[in-house]
Structures are given as C-alpha cells and as structure tokens.
Length: 165
Ligand code: FES
Ligand code: FES
Image (cartoon, rainbow, N blue to C red):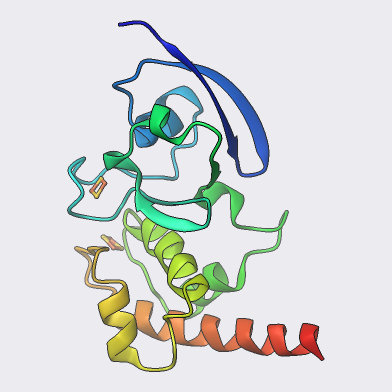
C-alpha cells in the first residue's frame, strides 16, 4: 500500500514521516519511533494501556490511525518529565504505590493528565474512579492510583494558584 506523508509533533519534536495508512499511532510510536513507553494491552480500545494525549485530549492510540492525525501534537509518557525532574503526577504514582508491574502505568498517567486538564479530577475519589475507568489495571493498584491522582491534582492546583497570584 502506498505510504502517505504526515507530520507529527511528538513530545515537542517535529517528525516528518512516510506512513502506511493502516498503521496505528500506537504502532508508529512503538515500532518506528522506539517510544515503547506507550503499551499495547489489547489493540482494540478496551484496556487503555495505549493512552496518549493528542492535541491535549486523551485517546486510545491503538484505535487511531496515524494518518488521521497529520499535523497533531502528541504527548507520550516519555515527554512528561521535565528533564530529570518527574512530573507531579509521576511522582505521586510512586509515592502512593500506584503501580505494581507497571504495564498499565504509562496509560494511567497519560489518562490522569487528560482528566486533570479536563477539569474533571476534582477531589471526589468516586469521580476519579469513573474518570479513569477506561484504564484497566490487572495488578489492582486502583487504591494507590486514586490517592496519587488526588494528591497530584491538589499539588497542581496549588502551583496554579501560586502562578496566578
Ligand atoms: S491497547 Fe489500546 S485500549 Fe488496549
Ligand atoms: S500495575 Fe500491573 S497492570 Fe496496572
């Protein structure tokens, strides 16, 4: 099949690529760009392990054809830390044991970033559980994940207030 030219900005870097139109964003990230942090747990939109942010919105990259997102801005787990410094959401996942095997973790963290950006995290654990219900964890780290999201959300809100003041 003929490849199509697309441009993607991934974690702040611009990539000009020739892509088979059948290739998903997930496979493009993992197999062409060696960004293997984004995981494939099902490849059919049911587990959330492949969650990334595209133009700020969380999506299942296994259900997204790369060519459909020509020109998009993609953030993957590899682009979340600021240099050596972990993002508050990453640090909170560690502090609260929000993972065990770690396979769902990149997706959980990207989904959390999306949830916070949507203004949907709030301080109600039930709402967080609902908001992250598209991200399955077989190690059942959900308790720690919810605590991590609550803490990260509070810290980010505080930081926002400081910036606004
Ligand atoms: S790999 Fe995409 S939702 Fe499971
Ligand atoms: S930490 Fe193992 S699947 Fe979530």
